[in-house]
Length: 119
Image 1 (tube, one colour):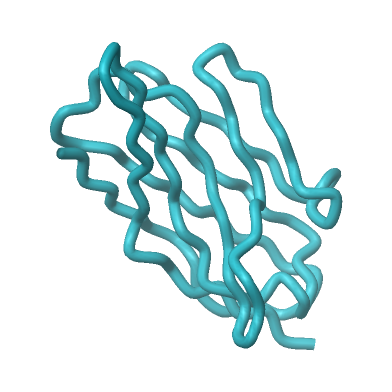
Image 2 (cartoon, rainbow, N blue to C red; image 1 turned 45 degrees about the vertical axis):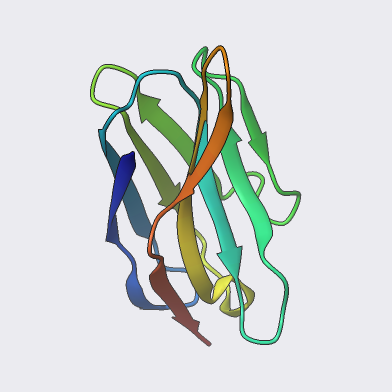
């Protein structure tokens, strides 16, 4: 089992910045991709950004150039630096970790942290 502990989030005005962090603990062997998804009220969950163990990133078009994802493989943490925030970035952000072993592949989710951007 893997536990994900998220930190960061909060409320800011448009144009502001926030940083989200997620730390994985427990049986972390086999972690591959880490990242963040978000879900706004009344909308489906959507990808924000993912990063592989080698540092290759994948961003949603809506956040490219504004959000930066990084990870520390030794500490099994992933962080999302968000700048130039917009009201449409308001959502619950969930940490996402994928673990692959010889026999299985499992996705773990954090509990979610609220990001609210006011205009």
